[in-house]
Image (cartoon, rainbow, N blue to C red; front, side):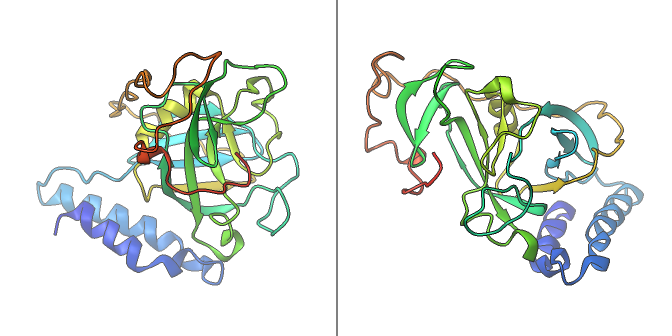
Length: 252
């Protein structure tokens, strides 16, 4: 088994390490990854590719994208205006380790409006007056700890918002909001299962990646049968199942 696959298998088989009940064991995950990287180097093997990860700072209202432990990019975000936590009936942002559970919005145009996680055909420009839907991309998060165990059921996303003037301060209803152009790029960098950590402290001081592998976002032009025009939206065809993963979204 390749070293990268070995690490991924280790993470899958040891999710309890990330639980709140065993906080002292969390560093073992990172230590194991470092050990495999060193072992690969010493054996003359290619460097292990660790999937891109994300750290979100509530204090800074910023998101850092990491690749192999080095900083690739930092984006402004907006967490909940109702504070922190993972309580039913509360529109708060959960802390701790989560992972990317689902991604919705492949090839949708920037500004695409989602309702019940379906692309409606409408496209909004930044800071469109009187509107506050989920737009552009949806990165759906699943909690890995007891302190964020309800995140997936509560529909905690990283997503785009037309209210870009609020980015940089707490203004969401629990999700992590980003500017459309930023979330479109981030979406393409995070595979399913990628780790996302939400902290209430400042972002760590991390070295900048020398030669990051940055994937370009897919085409932002929607097929003609999805959208007739931004001012005259057309419903999504039922055949576009890649944008209809789950229905009855309470937020979008």
